Length: 279
Image (cartoon, rainbow, N blue to C red):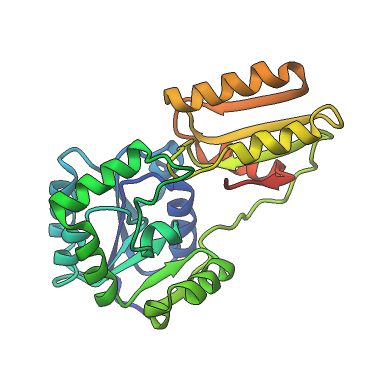
């Protein structure tokens, strides 16, 4: 049995609260004290028992993490729920702490050229990454961090196998830990064909033209509902939604959220999905 004073720290400053919630479900009942650093936690994270210590980030990102880690006096393991920037910062932390990382976007994490043009256009997000790479040597420290990390966790066996096949340099460190699951019974689905798109709308990382092309082929043949299951308040997302509404009018029902989606709502729409689409 583990020592009751043993702690684990979870750094979750970039959303993915559904994964954090599932991790806490797995660890509940253990002898661990679990500290979670978050920026804007949903209600379901705040209503946990004494075993779970929720810490709100109120300082600059790096300062918040350092302050958080400084209070984990017995901690030996730190789980970073997502990593897509701050490579130099995390590389320096890895010299003092045992860090594990969850990999969400395989290409973003491992590919050398993150600034490739898409259909002849360099998107603003890619330009920001290029500037960060010039100023902070992100690519250099990303490679150093990945080379030195012993724990890279994937959410499914299929993504792990893809990473092994395409990025063999780090395959010995790949582990699959399926943090995405549900404890609820799957409810009966409606007669409407439901397409659920988890995450926000980002033209730099997603190709929504595929969705438009598919809708143009099937709209009018069956009732269709499209759910953007993530924060969709950006002008880019609103333009896409307006375009879909104007194009398909009453043929396609569009559901979106202007704030982060709470876990019960997220679980509901995931369970209702006939198709999960990650363009």
